[in-house]
Image (tube, rainbow, N blue to C red):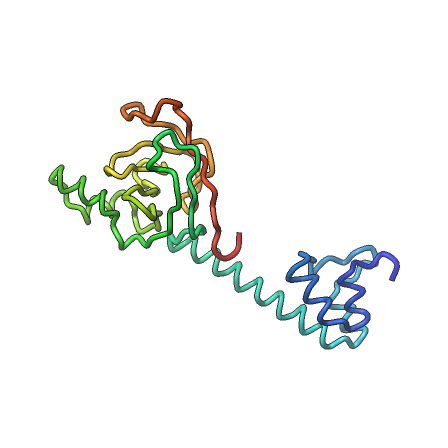
Length: 204
């Protein structure tokens, strides 16, 4: 067993339950050859440890499926984040929890602003959002979305007007920091900038 990883030792002894725990909870790499230079799957085959070989096979298949789903979400504009918590924003109404929403569900306050300005809500939202998920405050009309026209994330208040923006961030995930206050908006006495805590869905 010299130079073997814990998973390799489980493979050599056909300890399937322990192997599954190492993979799913311990973060063991199913392809790590360790100091002996042989992958865990090959050790399982050499040891005729069929139960461990099946555990490794299932784990790798599940991981491959999740990775493919991750890539598909990126291509289809679906967010990799399921929920957001905003902290420390100078505008108190923006602090709190946000849930991911589909692009087909237009923010109510976005629609209200469009109506006030005489704009076509569906056309304007489609041009700015371009089919990407966004995030809705669970208690008021504030929302966070990626504006494809200027490649920035926007954080709009409950009145539907922009308060903060963030540049140079992935269009599939709002940034945790580096937000800037818009100059034409009063952001509170302490001028503090928001921090976002992200709750990812699927593989990160």
